[in-house]
Length: 225
Image (cartoon, rainbow, N blue to C red; front, side, top):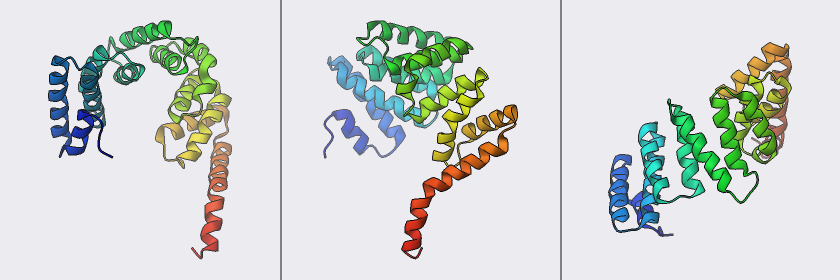
């Protein structure tokens, strides 16, 4: 299906990431000058994502900040604040928290989970794990289906010494990634060392992986594999 926007067409036509970003940024300038804030914001958002993929967070933040100035949507806000929370410069956490609190105040929902979750994570990054935990209590169940949020919830629980909750949150992720996520495995090892349950956690992870594999193994056996 042909792209519906000029920025979308650039994604299809560019021969390299460098060429793509040059085209997107040039189009963003021309679109903004012509009064097309939506088109300019879309192009800047794509450029920011491209910079992210190369680990160029500073450039990504510049793009996402301009995109948000042109189009104040939740998607643009999250694109910016997520990178600020990743970079964690001297003023990044303050800016992210200020923007997120303003968005929560303007939200029609009393407790918008994606916003409150990011506010909680901002506080955790500032070393305020108790405040983060209190906020996560209000929205945690709505965030649990998402692996990234399970990881953040587990980080907060581990910092507060809640080893049971940390294990409950991380075991499904260890199983889902088959023990290849180094951060998850390292956190589970911390839980095991603190509770003396390292071998038990390892056995449980292997058992759950085998349970997940069993239907595929049986199918392969039936097919002679």
